[in-house]
Amino acid sequence: MEIRLDGKTAIITGAGGGMGKAAVERFLESGANVAALDIRTESLGELKKRYQEKLLVIDSNLTEQASVEAAFKEINEAYGRIDILANVAGIAQSATDIEEVSLEMWERIFSINTKAVFLTSRAAVPYMKRQGSGAILNVASISVERPRPGLNAYIASKGATVSLTKALAIELAPHHIRVNCVNPGPSDTQMLGEFTAAGADVESMKENTFRKSVPLGDLIQPQDIANALLYMSSDLARMMTGSVVNVDGGRGI
Image (cartoon, rainbow, N blue to C red):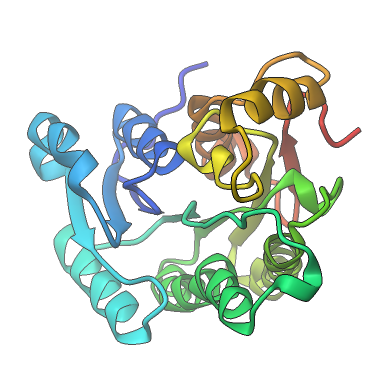
């Protein structure tokens, strides 16, 4: 069954990255109006030419309250509603022993991976409550369930995102706002190489560590995550809320 979101407005954060861009394109293909948010959006130029009025590209610092609130106001003014929020934005952590993790590193990872999810969710909810419906989708990580050494701050930040997902799911259920989470496994994006320790052979780690850790034998593609987000945002998933879905090729088993 083809999933259609005609008349819906979806916000995708981290839209300039590989996974975010794939989600933007997938939601546009479904007929949705899409607002693409990121601090760098140059990679979206070709999509903007193709979809023009269906795609609103906003340079936004997702860790700053004023920037987030201004973006959501602009989106509502442009399309008249906000139906879907997909929090795809995130940063990796270079594998680092806990005693070497600086406070600055810890706070930066939490700011982008967790604080941004709080700010965007808080901004979206009033619009969704007025409509009596909505879907919030958060991208966390399979490392929450199957940790790797040295990713302490990253895993903690994504664990907080999973917990926030469940907390908001029960809080917002009376308003028919669904909140779900996707745990990607090792994904074939630029971000994957950023998990390696400083000086490590990225390509070797990609093939001999990450790919081999996936029982189905391949890295997760950005489109795999985009498809999961699309399904979970649609009416086909109308009774899903508070769910944490692993799109990981079996890595979490």
